[in-house]
Structure formats: structure tokens, C-alpha cells
Image: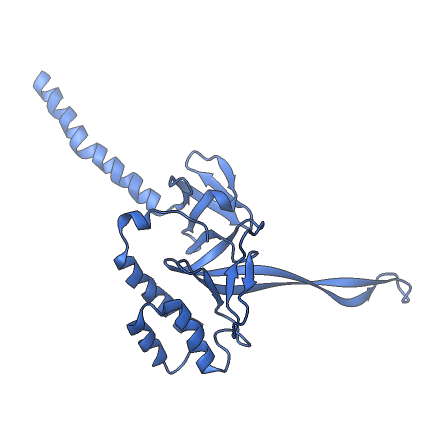
Amino acid sequence: MRQVLDIRIVFLLFFIFPSAIVHAQMKEKDMDYLVLMNADTLYGKISSVKDNKLKFENQQKEKVAFTPDQVYRAYWQSKKKVYAPSYVEKGLEVVPGTSPKMYRIQKGTDQGPTFAEVLADGEIMAYYVSELKFGGGAAVNVGGGGAGMMPTIMVNKNKYAYALKKGTGEVAEINSNNNGLFSNAKKKRQITFTQLINDEPALLAEFEKEQKYNYDVFIKYIMRYNELQQAKESPSDQSRLFIY
């Protein structure tokens, strides 16, 4: 009888417990998750991401708010979006003498990081950031008969895409059609992009042969550049967590 019980216990350990572990792992795969700046990973559900706050519900159903300096990456699975803390929204300054304009993170900036949507992750980071612009609109009659006129305030939310090269700190706007990388001057586009990938001449040569330059082409080359750089990195390089 004792032997029969032992066999049953072994059966439970061998078949049921591993099944429970696999089920838990599959469940976590579908969850949102955060990688914190201390390298911990939290699984749960992201409810909102704003410039300075991320709202999260963990597996224990506890609701927690995080600031950008606490989170290295946020993976919002249901929306298929990734967020990271970055200085690109509020900490940029123009590099003097550059045309089209190149940017860099201000040295000694007192502006903290904000959450930015990540378009490409690696040695070259590509981000989406949003900016609210306020302006005056036409006056509105609020009193009847023209007795009371109140000026209106127009609020526009613009989104900008930036590429930041970690090794040099160079930043380029990549969705400007007027004076950015995709202006009408092909030579200027190539010069600006050369500054980002000039350490991969074969990749740059392919870029220069492109017949059309647009946002999608630029993102494609950022991703290919990042793959080349990742192949050269050591595991210790990949484990460093910094805010850019």
C-alpha cells in the first residue's frame, strides 16, 4: 500500500506540477509587463501611460503608479506598444551649425525623463513623443447680442518621431517633411543619416542606393543597424539599464 501511495505522489510531481508551471508561463506571456530600473520584472495589466505616470495593476490585483525614472521598459501587449523613459521630449537642444537640424540631450538639464513610445530599440533608439501646443482662437459670443465675447483656446497635440544614437548622443527628427531628414534636399538627408550609421559603411552604401526616402525606410535601416550592433555586444553590455 505504501508503494502505491509513493507511485501516486511521484505521478503528481512528474506530471501535474510541470503542467501548472507551463500554464502559468503561458498566462504571463499574454500579460503586460514592466522591466524596472532595478532589473525586476512585473507582470499584470497597464491601464494608462502618460508623460509622467504609468498606471499598472499587478498579479495580486494591486494598483500601482510608476514614474519614468522607475521603469526601464513597459510592454503593453494588448496595444502592441513599448514605452521607455527618455529625455527627447523635454531635454533636447539644437546642435549649432547643423542643417538640417540635429539635436542632443542638454547637458545638466533639470528636466526629468518622460515616457515615450519606442519605435525601434537598440543602439539607435527611435521614439514617438507628443507635444501639446496652446494657441488663441476666434472669440465666441457668450452673452447674446455681442455683449460678451470670450476668446477661445485651441489645443493641438502633435506627435514627433526622433532617432537617438546612444554612443554619440546625436538625435535626429525623422518625421519632418519641411526641414528634417526628409526634406527635398536628398544630399542633406544622406549627410544627416550618415552621422547615425557611418560606422556601418556597407549598410550606409545600401541606404544611398534607395530610390525613395521616407519614414518607413528610415525605420528599416535603424532596425538593421541595431541588429548589426547587437551581434557585436557582450551579455554584460546588454544588461546595462540607462535612460537616454
